[in-house]
Image 1 (cartoon, rainbow, N blue to C red):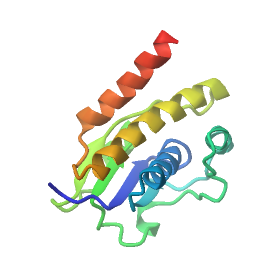
Image 2 (cartoon, one colour):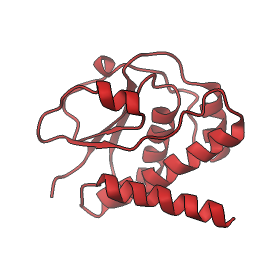
Image 3 (cartoon, one colour):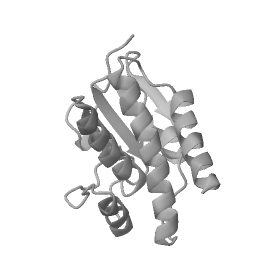
Image 4 (cartoon, rainbow, N blue to C red):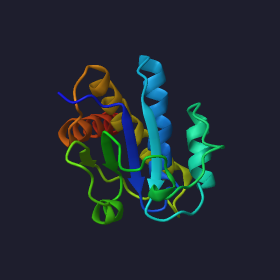
Length: 162
């Protein structure tokens, strides 16, 4: 069992999905009383999308002070316990990490260019994944892609039932 305390969430532009995931992981960590250091970054830097700020604000998570960052702008960018990529492009371009770093990938659709309903769907799926991630870590285990996928699938099945 590896202790997970420092988490990096990567996406291409660090403007939406990775920002929402960072917000959710911090939120769930506070809820469980688990101290985690959580960062998000992109392979490129742009700006946090207004729609991401809006839909996260709807669930009480403020991204208003978040900024888009590149990996090389983070403190100690090579010392994360867990690196999670949330888009396929970031997974393909993600640099190699030391063997002690757990690498996970769970891709979420890009809500950019869609209405707020799509943004909410992506937000809620990322929220379900983030809850499973934090709960697994809080129980002293290292999360797996399977556990995170199951959480998203359960969330989506619940949405389909209505």
